[in-house]
Image 1 (cartoon, rainbow, N blue to C red):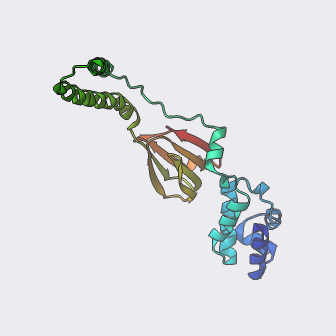
Image 2 (cartoon, one colour; image 1 turned 90 degrees about the horizontal axis):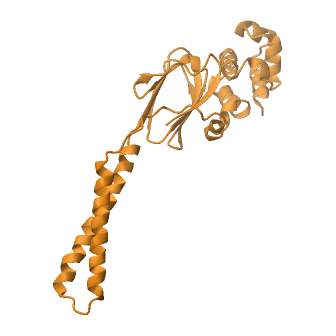
Length: 242
């Protein structure tokens, strides 16, 4: 059963004519007729369509979430995976200050590499000799192991410094309703309606990707800084923060 059929059946079950429903909901008769024919093109976008469905649900005595979920699955562009949508407009990236690695780190790594190479040459030279005191093997072998470990630790530490800072995004519906789809570090963490007064925070370490409808009704705060509005009323936007 389509959403249009559900609307028509609910109206008839409530013993309402389409004229009476139009008068009580302030929705044009022509638009109601199109909606009952499962045509939502002239509703003015997803946000307005959901608003019309809520009014109709209240008048015919049906839970509005039933109509809205059916709309999302049949007609809304938001039911597509957010990862596919972001490919079309993956241009919003958070400026990140380039971190400079101290010259002491690569210098220390270079010294450790030279030490390891020197010890390796000594071990090879001693092993090729026919008269090798046992104590020589005991002394040189442990020395190579800590040096190699220290080299690995020193070379790995810059990577940890560069990639360890989290990304925190807070979304507040301060001026209206919206529909949001949030992906944090490749995992979809929230998808659905976001009503006025709602507030959510998200933290990631690689990227936070968002899809928003009606961005004019939302306030976004990135790492404690309030962002400028991402779009106008009833627009649909996609952004990625890294």
